[in-house]
Length: 224
Length: 375
Image 1 (tube, rainbow over the protein chains, first blue to last red):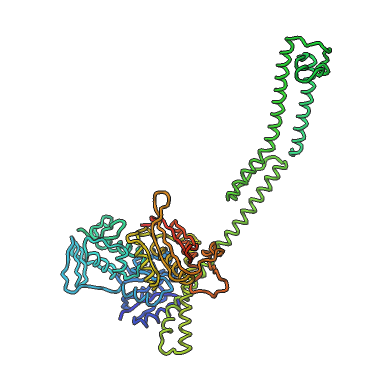
Image 2 (cartoon, each protein chain N blue to C red):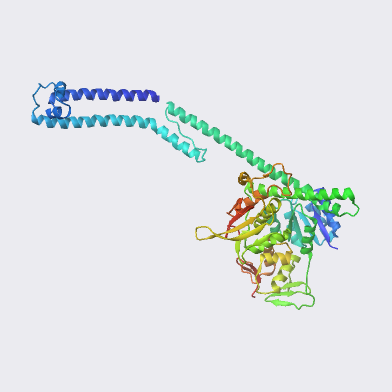
């Protein structure tokens, strides 16, 4: 049973989401403010953070940035407006996905499942591409011998792309395979995640070696 | 000096000049004894004699005739020139402010309410200019005020919708629990179902209000992607469970559109056809030449019902428009077609509504194959 850390300042919305998530089988820890969330985060042992953007004090973007500094816990932003500013801000802060309020519990459930899923392939041998080592069985990625710490979404994106080297994936395909979105997923999610992944595995993000952009089509892994 | 005084003076000057000229001619003709042939040929016998005091039957001497004729012509031309100059100068003084006023009025009718004219002098025309400026200022103030009011109203609609989202978040989260609760039976279960249905309806309404307020505020953005049209149409229909809609979209037809917005346009048009038109509903797509060597994506949604009432056609895209005012509210928000049109416009395209000659309403969306946008 996964544990959700829910950060929402409005008592009714917090309580409502808590009830719905419990009913869906999650353990829920609720926090009213960003400060409380950052404080409780360690002992909550949460698997995923559902984070409201508009919070008194530290806003959701800042909380997300601070969480990212120390952990790779998946973060889903709860945007009240569905405004582009909120969405772009959340993705820049390092959020894995976002949902727009008011959200249907089954949609939130699907998103949570997608971002916490770590799908490996047991017994698969570790693959090496240049300086990069990908172990699909143990779900470990190393660059030049150093462990690279990835969020589940970043890891899945890397596994999908490197699973078929040189094959071009469209943003739409990646949204489907990694985020498990319906066909109207936001392609900016993919772009933001690629940026974060590049920052972690590429030596020079302006000239990426592993995750390459195919202009007008999407992304591909290699050729290395 | 008032215009009237100026005109009176101008007329007096002209009258004096002509009086002077006529007496001068009189003297001139008398002195030089104008040619007799003028007298005979043009004006009839005796006329000149009476005028120039030549004795009857006696002609003016030859050399004098020519000199007098030239003199007469030059003098007449000179006087005419002086009088014309005076008249033009006087009319220009009068007409110049009128012309400036006309230019200003033209600019104003073109929408530039900030236009003002510098008044000169203190005559009636200067007064007219001052009144014009006053009118322009009043008009500008009024329009500014109205625009502000409209902006406030739009902002208000947007704000209210945002505020509604927070309570709706709580309600949307829990209403399912209530609905699925096995302990609720009979009336209680029916009430729970109704609450759930209306919460969903309220969600749609708020969503659409926020969407349209984004268009009003000019903050709607286009995120375009190369899109397979047949695929987009198929997925739009499948996602909503509309399996009874026939489609005719050529394979391989692609366009650069905002996928979410394209889906919204299509869903609103098909949803509208299913609710208000008659079955079967068909979706056709193709490329239409735009007359400039390029092409436009044309998507046609047609139903086979009674069609639109002609008087309603210009209003179908109005917000909350209902062709039949007596009808109870439908499951749509009443903003669907307005949102569809705004989305088409954002792409640089448009939607037209009409009736098919073979019966039923037709909505045609025209979008550029390459909409401007990011990526």
